[in-house]
Image (cartoon, rainbow over the protein chains, first blue to last red):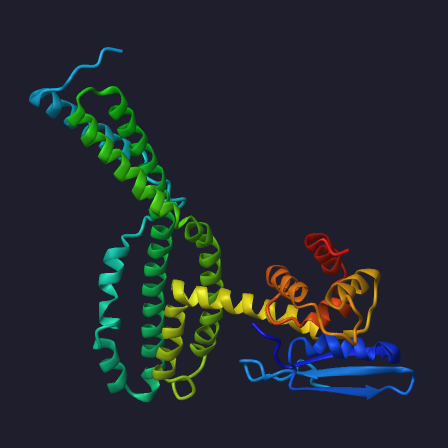
Length: 62
Length: 294
């Protein structure tokens, strides 16, 4: 089964963002967002196709 | 041991003896059900409850005055619950008992027939007894394939008991209400739920749902987390991108890693989570060991 929904890696050092993005891209996400935390880190959010139950995320506060 | 060929009367005698032994073994292997003998004649009770199922009492209810309806409704509810309890108890006993009888009985009969085959002369006799033995043991082998089913019976019964208790709650609450607030038609819906809660399909559904929820919870804990880079993660990363992260991934290594992930992680976990997830450090080490990652 391929990944579905939203997966998120928080507090990624700027120097490691490319690695995280490359790793996510192995599973063909529909999009990848990089959110600057303005403290030298980023949150990397990978969105995959919706899960079978219709949920796109387990993160209601996002 | 002197072995001689059995003729007609002797063969018949051996066959009769084998049959007697088999019957004796079957009787000896009567399953220990694990339930005390019920002093109640439940068949008679069920017969007395027939009017609560054949429409007789429904008619009485529909023709009753508003003041009487609540009492008749409760009478119907309690009668039906009693009937469902009796049939469920019987079902429960048979679920336990049948499995024991099949396993122990056929094992011993199979062994006895095999023993007779070995010690009784005559090709025809050997052939007949051997076939019977193989048949019994073969049947038991097939039944043992259902061992998993047998072992899950206690869990399914526990689930059924729990589901029945849950389904009972609205009925117990309902009988305290007047008929206007808890009419018979609503009670029937609740009673059907109570009846169905004591079935294997409902129990399997409930167990599977729990398992599915647990799987979803496991995935949810992996979906988000802070970035962690440890030496294991770095080694797996270098295994995937031996020429550097900005170069193409090693497809053979990626295929091996995916195969390993399928066997060791919940389905649907991206490679990224294995590389950098804070809760998967032990899995990273295991992957390195299993895949002989340099």
